[in-house]
Image (cartoon, rainbow, N blue to C red):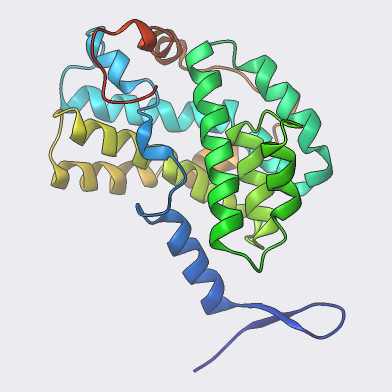
Length: 238
């Protein structure tokens, strides 16, 4: 079996191609406890507000969610991956950007869940100090910059980190739509397959954006999500 090894300066094997594939598969697996499945990304509130009523609405929502993630979140993911030392400033910027209290709360919850799950699931990684900073309240732990920092700590390269982030964005919408009874399981898989084709083009359009270039491109999603706490009944935290 062929192995492509990456060596550090001391000649110690850090990762091989197969190990890295397994790592990514584990991160994307629905069983990985990163907290994403407790959030709908505003879809549940959109349904209650009458903005999403059928499968066509779910597809449009998913595409807008991925495009918005590229414009509003990907620059922070990218910057944190490139320079973990800037995580504190990026975390502060993300906190100021997410003025919607529901989105802000969800971002902090997901970021904390991700860093805790990753540090405990991969004890050989160097994520302990990051978990300590987040759990010690030195950081708010917002999801976008924490995602970039965690994936950097796990040795996942930047492009795969960007792809994984946007893939999970689409999957969150598809999963929530199934549980809300808007589409079936097969429809969700078709949706995931279709919207995933947009991921690389979104990365190409947004990868050169700087953190201060972040912006909302789907304000209706943001407005709907901000009403989530006032819903009479709800399945998700956001």
